Length: 63
Image 1 (cartoon, one colour):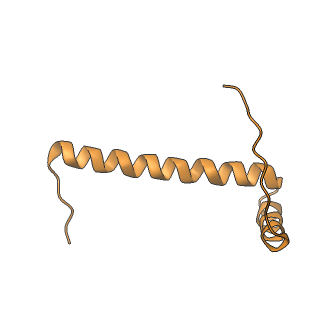
Image 2: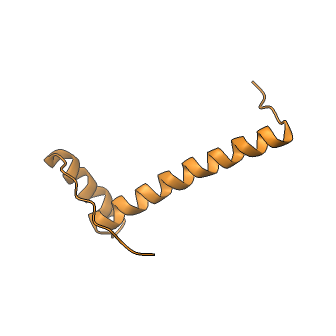
């Protein structure tokens, strides 16, 4: 898998919050942001898979 560059312009307050969260985990801001995006992408794909499985098997969620 190759890599690409993504450049972001964010305000100072957000960058400081990201630095704080990353530092608590012993990570760089870049690693923290990438892991956050990966986790969010996984959550979205997992939810889609659950919904497709429920449609396939005709399962309905209790309300």
